[in-house]
Length: 148
Image (cartoon, one colour):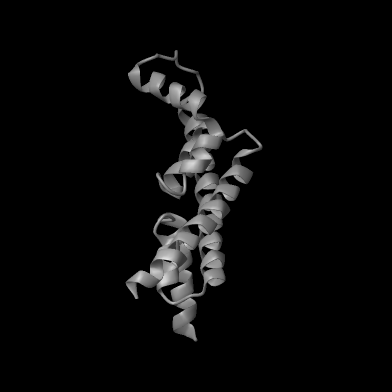
């Protein structure tokens, strides 16, 4: 009983950090399709909320402490690249690639840095986690039996 509870807690924590691999690991650990979806969504949602609000607090703290007098903005290659990605991909693109191509922590830190005041940020990140949980679990359910 306790071992299974600790295993589920570990899988939830794993899916909050390494979401791309979590549904496969959960499903191949012996959990059913719907249990896999529930565990991976729980971990992903937990990761999004923790890392987004932690990132927001960190960036607010840094901004309040070190940037009271706004320095003159310099447009170097890095800043131009960030602006180009932000304008071309935007919040929706970041939400789509956050759980899979980049990790949830990195995606949420980027979202909290550049889209902190947008009301759509948290709902888009959470819906992306739900969507990718369904997709990755379905793919694992189709391909997973080949490895048994």
